[in-house]
Length: 178
Image 1 (cartoon, rainbow, N blue to C red):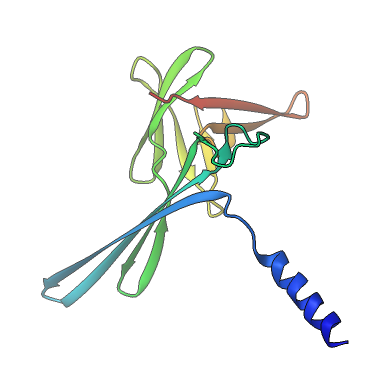
Image 2 (image 1 turned 90 degrees about the vertical axis):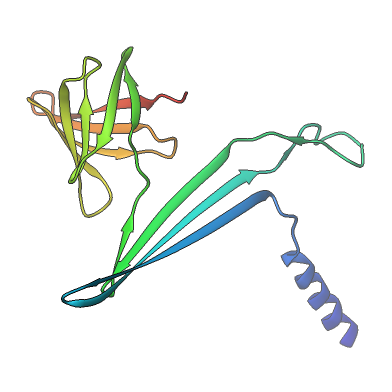
């Protein structure tokens, strides 16, 4: 009986031991700013965390060679910033300012005080993007209001309702990676 219990416990413990299948690098930078004015002393704490995750894949996974070469895989970077002022913490998302491509035209998205502005290739303002409470965006152009969000690849996805056809149309602005 004792050997059965020891054998089962050894078996269960061996199930939890696994090989690591991703490289993870995390960097945290904290900046404390103290401001003294007529109202007193105020502290502002800014914490930036950058996390890089890379999946581990082998070039010749099926070969019988003992030491195998690692294949280069894309690195997924996640950056979060928390700012604490007067005991109130705000989380600031990743800045999505970049160039985006739609039907061969290159649009620019840049930040402003309330969200983002989108510009045509000639520099004229095309639309505005305003953040909602659930980390999505309202896209507003001259004749169009849409619901927008950024996917895992950084592309801007807009979903619009068409009253005439009673359907949702999806428009994807692909991020330009240079």
